[in-house]
Length: 421
Image 1: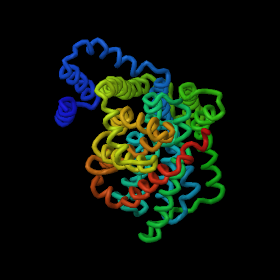
Image 2: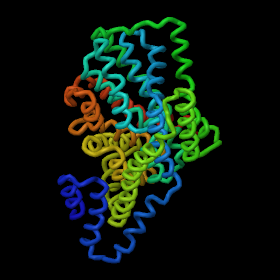
Image 3: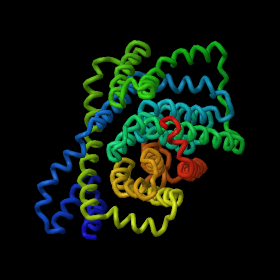
Image 4: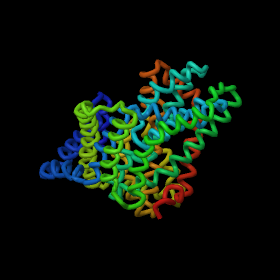
């Protein structure tokens, strides 16, 4: 109780979540009266990041940096426009489809929202869409980033759960595509109700030329996902090859990437990677403290008294994680909840850890789009000037369909595991 109170108090005064986890561990050791635990403290932190799979994180982040510097995002948006731009609500479809393609390279919800808001929202405004709706839709499109591989959150989860990174990345493909289809269905209904504008129709020649211009950019996700699916490379090796592919496409096809940009990109990638890896190290300490204090056992006892079967357990987890995700960012939320909930899921209810990981990640990402925090809405608001609260209200149907998607995944694990087993 002292440790929990200390953690909440430290977090409420605005201390970064990584330091909160570390300081909470120190408070527990002092409160336990066992100073010998301090000797294991640095070893637990080092052990948390002593994993080959974590090398994929800076590589995936570097791919996103190279893609942005190489003008690849814009080509992807143009390609999506060639396919669905002429439909009623065409730019809304383009927004979601472009986010799906971009998410297969970026893997970060907040980074994706920041980039796509600059590209899509002004264009949607020019064609008559409400700015608040355009910004909110872009925020929901960013939700696809941590689901469709590559995904930093899946890499972190795989290390926490001790499952292959490749399996986790592949398990997000079908749920990501299904969520994209559901979003498009919502746009179709809203387009009919609110009479969304139709985009300009391209000539067949221009459509073909646009697709051909963008086609080489798809080699980046194909290299990453294809090398993993075929067994030619593991996730870390695929990320390295993907970074090379992004650099080559940006330099020799789009001709917007310059090798002189590499030092700056490496610096930004290193800073963001350091933040993520410090969180992982802090989580290792916090997990060690939780296990030492027998917290998972006590939580397991309470959950077993409430949930009598795996489906009930998963639905209960959905509610708990959605609440947690509304106030805590994705990766910190993952780090705080997985050590407690995963042993219960696998040992008590015999749930596949890969399926459980997909549900947990989608849950926490949805929290980025839920009040009171809604980090993705705030990112979109910072770029576009729209109000976060209004964004949530006008895009409420997307929130509802995302919750439906979570229930479907919880009941039918095959959707997560079909490409693995």
